[in-house]
Length: 116
Image (cartoon, rainbow, N blue to C red):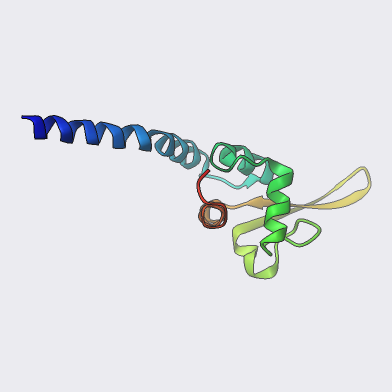
């Protein structure tokens, strides 16, 4: 009987430890149905990594994923869609993270930063 109670207590502890990860995964998967902006991606991952949009851009530049102008290098283009347009007479290009890109970046950031 005591062994069963210890096993139940152990399993409850595991569930408690995994709860934040499950909540994070649920949030992430609900939003992983479309391309999102880097700001949206940073908001989704803020609980996990504790960094905002600007720090996310900086980190991805330091990891060699984005260039100085925040556009992806050629080998990472499959993870981004670049939106082009004109605003106030100026051309602009903005990277949006694809569904595959969200999964890749999440995996890469976990590898580089670990879980905080």
